[in-house]
Structure formats: structure tokens, C-alpha cells
Image (cartoon, rainbow, N blue to C red; front, side):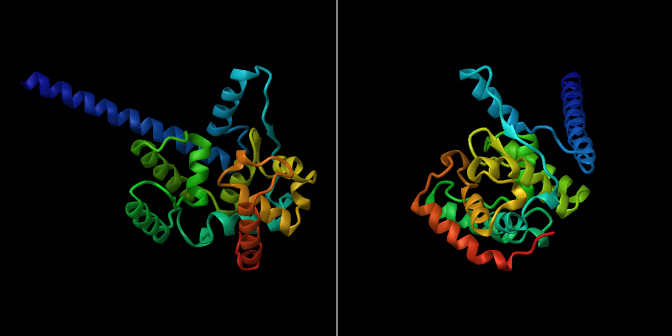
Length: 231
């Protein structure tokens, strides 16, 4: 019995050490990305692997641009659409989480989320689209690391440069050129609002494709953009 307990303890200790090493790996990457730009993300690599199952020559459309070369209209539109309390929380919008929990409980299934921009960035950089409990727990830990180690401006810059805006289209520069034929710096308020409205289902939209839902969401975002605060 004593030998069994010792084995259990050693196994538990090894698991703790492995978990600590994984968190340290995340921490080192976040520290590095405070001053360097990631060339790809977990989401990008997963999508490219999927696309290459049909076409071995498939490539992603992605071009990094610094924060000052991304239209202020897009910065405000994305904050309005995805996380209007971005500047005022520490990675988690607890009020939104509570409302989402209550809505999902009433519906009996997950119909709405409450992820902040920082949480979405954590998922995009490191994780998969799985909703397993362990993935959500890891996302929360990475979110806390991002908020502790990076300024809000850098978090938003990273997000705008890696988020998906079409099948195989990532980041504001590629999105602006793909959908409107202009650089990210030249996006108009209407174009920025339209891009922000696409974020929940980016692969559903090709250049020129329109729906009533997209029109309504674009109008709502456009009307609220003047109140948005960005870093």
C-alpha cells in the first residue's frame, strides 16, 4: 500500500512539473512577443494544415502592420463589436460572463459567449477552437499572462494582426486588401464597421458578399464607434 501511495505521489508530482513547464513555455513566448511580432499563430497553422489537405500549395494571406498603420476607425470598430470594456478590465468581463451564463442556462445550450479581446488573442495565439474545460482553463491562464505582461495597445495590435477575416485571410492588412482593395491605414469608417461585423463568422464573407444581418450589424457598430475608447 505504501509503495502504491508513493507511486501516486510521484505521478502527481511529475504532472505538476509538466504543467509548470507548459505554463513557462507560454510565459516565455508572451515575453518575447512584447517586442517581436509572431510570424503565425496556432489558429493559422491549423487552418493552413486543413487547406493543404485539398491543395498542397495553399497559402495564407497575412501581412503584419504596426498599430499606427491600422486605421483608427478599425481599432474603434473592433473594440465596439468585440469588447467595449477592453480598456477597463483585466482580461475578463465578469458582467458579460454572468449574462452569458444566464442566457445559456435558459436556452439549455451555448448560444452566446463573453470572450474579451484578450481571451480571443490567447486562443488564437496558442490554442484550438475546442470548448473542452481544460482548454478554457488554459485560455484563462494565458489571458492573465497577456494582461500582466503586455500593454493594452500591444494586445490590440497583436489581435488586429492575427484575427481571421476570411478563409485563409488573417490580420487587418490582408483583410482590408482582400475585401476592399485598400491598405489597413486607408479604411473608411463604413469599411471598418463592416469588417468588425464579420468577425463572428469570418469565413462566411467573400468580397462584395452581403446579408441583411451584416448590414444591420455594420450600422449598429458605425453608430457606436464615436463613443469607443482605444489605447
